[in-house]
Every structure is written in structure tokens, then in C-alpha cells.
Length: 494
Ligand code: NAD
Image (tube, rainbow, N blue to C red; front, side, top):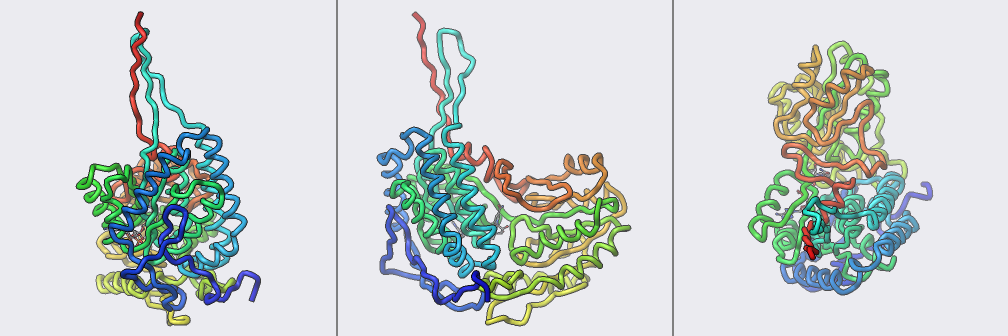
């Protein structure tokens, strides 16, 4: 037992909605929330109906208009957001415990990665607050044409369960820097760290009502948020299917703009001339075993040149044997549980269907025997697959890597292209020309060359091609997506 280990029953749960700076809990229907590590129910979450959502959005609208958040000198906004980031850093351990308890993030990673990058992401966006400008347009010389950017007012955000805190900061950071208020609906499976995140905003001096959280299911609470008439824009991260439903609901309820960060099935293209196959194998393993593959940009399809295939597989088999599964509250755990039993069954179903269609498991391919009743899945490598194999075609969101091989560049690039998804891709080669040709050809919103996975370079926007999404999170683009533009023409002719 180290300092970071914790007793899951000792964590204080901020259970409720967070509206107007207060934790709100009303009588009404609830949903049981389970800890993924041991499948135990640890809280009853209220399901916010249309009235709760209306209360939150009206409150946010009033705060945005009257609190001075949008009208104060923008450096003040930046300062408040940086204080917020500092409070998150100061609570890194308790916030890490809350995140680890309810999600699939082992405590060591929750502390070092999730909470730390949540704070750093807010700082990145805070720095935009006083660097936003408009344009002076070319007009006749006795006129002045301006393009002025303005916040929407209230932005709605809907987040998934896989990285609750960082997803909340990716949404709140740009929305607030641009002067909006936000109402966040976290996933009903991981709802509580977002409440503490919002409480800390108010403690940092951000006016009550600027950061709000409504709890509940997607069908009830999420849908009511999307359809609320005062919501100016919707920012969503989750599955492609839900993204499509949100786009339709948003169109039907006021043609609100949407940013959609959706699913992926990202390839890792490994050429035989990769600088180091040892390092490439480590990156490939980390990209699919991190968070047990429950990562939108997981490098789930290994596409390796024939001459390098055997060595890559041999190295991967060693690396796939190394992760230590366990409860998220143990500092020894390096391999995450699956978020829920139905999701573990879903992973297993895709693996079974793939094997029935001819795939073979080089390792794994089964549920891991239960650890404290949690749902775990074995690190799995499937070979003998084709573009038709379910595991190659469908987003699994589990620790399952498929291996395909190719002879030449053209074949490798053709295999890398997925008919539906285009979120991210990796290319590994020491040949700069080959790498650049691949960068041009790959249809993905992010291409990593000789590395895989995000850094703290929040300046790089993230988002998908094809059905992996619309618009961007992170980067300048995320801030711009939280602003609308007004054209002003001033006539000063004598
Ligand atoms: P999900 O689509 O099931 O749910 C996401 C959120 O949407 C939840 O808060 C849910 O309650 C809500 N929701 C569900 N139905 C809704 C509806 N009809 N109206 C409004 N809200 C609704 O996704 P998930 O299972 O929580 O997350 C996993 C998915 O998220 C994967 O597909 C993954 O690739 C994707 N993801 C993408 C990114 C990215 O940056 N592209 C990042 C993380 C996760």
C-alpha cells in the first residue's frame, strides 16, 4: 500500500446537479451508479428532467448576461480561469480519487495525467481570453467594416465516460474564455468528478451560474439540454450514433451549431524501415492498452509491412503480458477495468464474431476472470483478419488490437483507410518522404509520425474526418467554435 492507494468507501461523493453555484438534489427518478472496479453501486444519481435542465440553462443565461463574466476586461476572465486551474492542482489527490473511484482510470494515472492535464488545459484556454479579436474588412474608404466576435451566451456540453475531467475541461475552457456560460451533462456512468470541477470554478471566483452541471441519462437529460431554446451551441463527445442523434435534435430545435467528437478505428502503419521496432511496438501497445483501449484515438488497427510482422508480433506479445489489472484505487494497477459489464460483453461479442469469421487470437480473446466483481478484458491480439472482420470494422473500445500486413506503400495506405472513421492515424518510418506521402494521403483529423498519442500541446486541434466528427476540440479552432461573428458596417461619409 502506497500513499496513493485509497479506500473506495471513504470518498465523499458530490451527488446532485450543480446549478447557480449550488449542489441541487430534488426528489424524483434516479439511476444507480456502479464502480467499474468492483461493479458495486455507490450512489443514486438524480435524472434531471426538462424542468431541471430549464432551471440550469435559465440560470446560466442570467449569469452570463448580468454577472460581468463576458463584459469584464478579458484579462480578468483569464485570471479567474487560471485560479480555477490552480485550485484543481491543489486538489489533485482528492480529485484524482473521485475520478479513479467512478471511472476506469487507475489512481496513479488519474493523478499524474487526468487531473494534471485538466488544469493545464484550462490554463491554455485562459490565455486566449484577451487574445481574441475580430477583423477590419475591406470596404469603401468612407465606411468602416468590422467583423466582431461575440459569445453565444449559454453553451451546452455533453461528455462521455472515458476521461470525465479532461473532457469537461476541453469543453469548459474554450466556452468560458470566449465569455460563455456552460451547462455540462456528464455521462451517467461517471457523473461526479465534473461536479467537483464545477464547484472549484466558483471557489476560484468565477461567478455562480457560469459553470453548471445537470445529471441524468442521455435520452432524458441530454436530449432536453440539446433542445433547450436558450442553448446557443452544443459541444458533444461520444459515439457516432449519439452524435448523429444530437445533430438531428439540434437541427429540429433551432438549427444550433454542433461540435461533435465521435468514434474512431485508428490505424498504426508500421513500415519495415521504422527507426526502432522495439520503440514502435511499445507505442503500439500503449496506444491500445492505455485505459484498456477505452480511448477514442486508440491505435486499434496495426498495419505492418510483411518483413517487420514477425518481430512486431513477438515484441507485442511480451508487452501484452505486462499490464497489471486491478481496482482503480490501487497504485499497483496499470491495466483498467472495462466501464461496465454490458460493455465487456459487447467487446467479447465483437471478438467472438471476428473469430467465427476466421480471425485467430494470438493472445487474449476472453473476459479476464473477475477481480472483485469488476469487468476486465484480456489484452488481445487478433490476426487472420480482413477489412470485413467485425474487429477491424467496428469500434470496440476495448484492449483489442487487430494485425494486418502489407507488401508495399500503396497497399498499406489502402488498408489504413477506414470506410467510416477518420479520427487519428500513426505512421512509423525512418524515411521522411514516405512519412510525408502518408501524411498527405491518410484521411484522419490527426496524424502522428514516429509517435502515437496526445501531448500537452493543446494548440493542436483534435477532431475527426468522416464519421469521426464535425469541428474541433482544443486549439484556436475550439475557441472560435464558441464564438459567433457579427458584421458591422459604419458609414462616415461627410
Ligand atoms: P455515448 O455516445 O453513449 O454517450 C456520450 C454522452 O452522450 C453521455 O453523456 C450520454 O448520456 C449522452 N447521450 C446519449 N444519448 C443521448 C441523446 N440522445 N441526446 C443527448 N445526449 C445523449 O458515448 P460513451 O459510450 O459515453 O463514450 C464512448 C464513445 O465516445 C466512443 O465512441 C468514443 O470513441 C467516443 N469518444 C470520442 C472522443 C473524441 O475526442 N473524438 C473522445 C472520447 C470518447
